Length: 481
Image (cartoon, rainbow, N blue to C red):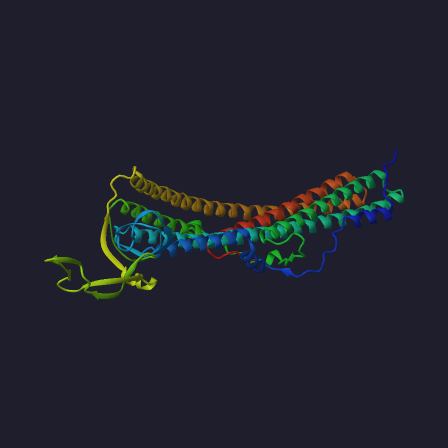
């Protein structure tokens, strides 16, 4: 029983089905433009910029703490019953409206440098957030470059898969003619048709991977997935790569230790922790402050003398020998008339001032102050360990990247030889197949070996390129394609 075969039209339609769709004409971006866009739109970068603003606010607020504190208060109300007059301080039993005004100020003049050290700590925190933002930008630029390379790799695989489809189709067409002429059995055509179907499936997978890689880059750029977008595809042989001999790990580490944002951030965090510990220690000692206040008050029942009248009226009568006589005082006495005091006059009359010096000595605080100091010292030790760990990790990563790059270049050269040998073997297999000396199964096996060798070479080449770019990144040169 013969295997089912595809007609020429069906084979053509089958092949067209798996051809890459014509991409919409869009503007293509190079790596620099992608990175610039990511610096403005990536969520991680924008979050780090917000953290800088938070740290700047904390730093500015800590500097303002050196200035005097001032508070103004005003109260307006009505009081009834037996109260103390807020202006004369005498006891009265009546209802009245009152208004009190007070301005108070306080300034710490010595606090064992607690505030000064707090300001220094906040300044280091601010610098740390700036270094953190730089690290976020570096990480995003590295991730964008990796995603960019992943797209180039995926599209190389698409090209390779497409060439395999074309080769399979050409081989099938030649075989079909020989089968139709009775020179080859139908089994040969069936094997090649199966190979064409498998190659077409691989092409679809490669195209899907390329589309997914582009979507990943869009995600890093914080770009809408539906946006028409594509990248420039620089020839891989024109991508600049520094000589591996110029990227010795010890030299690269010496540069990275002084330039990488993570190491800068660790230094700022350690300085901030030390200053915070000094500030916590200062909080356990006495604080000397000066204070002052201004105030005044108004009472709706307050009165003042509005007039004085001299009166010499009799104060009584006496009868002498039956004759009544009026008795007058030796001198006239004054009779006062009263009126309400105006609002602003009262404020002027009741104006008062005070100034003084205060000393605050923390005696018992439930151990909070000492615990805060001890906790701050432990935090210094923790930050020191973090800094040491990050430096160790950086050196390990650099040495690993160097070893990986060395292995990658050796693997790339080995895969080149493998491709050359597989290509020669496939050429011999093709000639033998055309002469009828080789089965279609063996031909497909030889071609699959070539395909596998070519795929391995592509992966090895891009792996080497990425490892080299990673070393250049650690050296502080950024990533250039």
